[in-house]
Amino acid sequence: MDSQHRRRMTAEARREQILDVAHTIIAAAGFHAATPHRIAATAGVNRSLLYQQFGDLPGLFVALIDREAARAATQFAAAIADDDPEPGADPLLRAFDGVLSAVDAHPETWRLFLFPPQGAPPELYERLAVSQAVVCEYFVGQLLRINPDLEDPEYTARVLQASGRELLQLRLADPASATRDRLRALVRRLNSELLYRIR
Image (cartoon, rainbow, N blue to C red; front, side, top):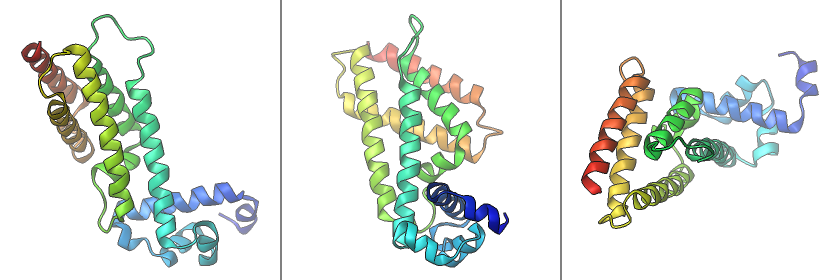
């Protein structure tokens, strides 16, 4: 990237570029590797610009975490949107399909939360806890729609959530083995058994 192009970048574009560079470094080597010098050198900017944009390195990390958390939240909301469900469709499988597509399309966003990198700041775990609460609430709502008399929907939802998280981790870690068809078939079987047992 030449100096003339760097000067033409807007402040917002520059901010996104710096966050992208930091994310790439963190994904490859952890938060500890994302030093101001390395981020600035890779982005082709002066370190002073990092401090102008983010205040300090922790501020940059929080900005990155918040950006990726917002992206994941938007993708999850799209995955569970009930715009035009097919009659008799399994809402849990439909949601899993949507999240699986999001993971495939944006692996680095989801990897940040499914496999928190070494040295992750507490803000990442705070955002993760919030997102897990949202997902659990979604599962509780779906389970009670299926069976309003379900005993202990909260813990049932937590089991579903933990299972889904494990399958998404497998997809990221070993996509050749954890194929979409294999994961979908397993979720369909698990849901069928669960729905049969709780009705």
